[in-house]
Image 1 (tube, rainbow, N blue to C red):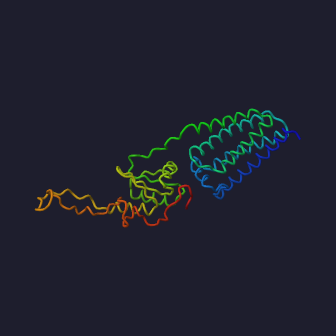
Image 2 (image 1 turned 60 degrees about the horizontal axis):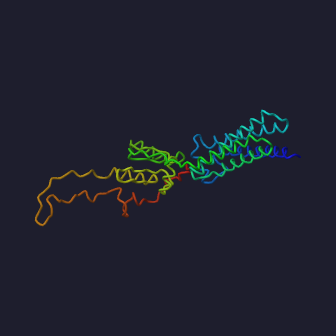
Image 3 (image 1 turned 180 degrees about the horizontal axis):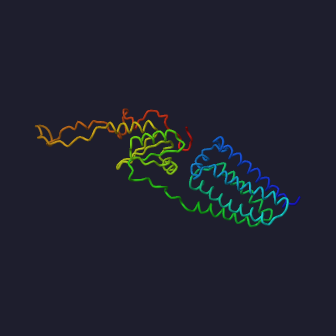
Length: 302
């Protein structure tokens, strides 16, 4: 058995098994809402796919299935056209895998184990193709290296800037039932709240120690306050509704003997509730009660 034939046989076996694995993943996601990969990295990466993780799985499945069919055809009879198509698919797939892996490593700082498995499959297929004499596939490895290098050399932007003109910003997740509840309540109260998906600012919030949704940001001119959980948000809104109006300016009265400046009267509103004052056991905003109305930002809760 020649080395070229052995490489072609291994190529067919690897591509067929990989296509079968992606088929199982597609079935699990479509019918059961589950995935072979259950790590946190896979959940984080999934949130950044525009059309959902299933779309990416189907794209990989279609590519590997086509490669498998063409490789099986080559085993029966040599076809220059099939060779060119397989080589083209491998070159473009290697370049695409360079983008996916580079984005995960140097932008998200989170790695999908299943994605790395697919990445390894295309590396193996490309190497077997080169060993079988298809030198043009080397261009795919060059594209892979170039894309990874560019991701490494160029620092990421600071992310999307928060809207500075919004007094309230609610960070939510589409998979969080509590987010849907609080968003509905805010709409019913006709509050001017900017709703932003947490994926857009996940890194910033994680650096602040915020990993759950819903989270309401009170964007004050002198202070920024983050409230996580439906109960904490409701208590804040209730405190704002119950806070007394600002006292009206009173006329200055002559100072009595022994007093200081004229008009230095006590303000009856000075001891009223200040919802944002940190500290104090009676403050439910900064010392909230245990709250079950939260979801992990990268988890699905219903």
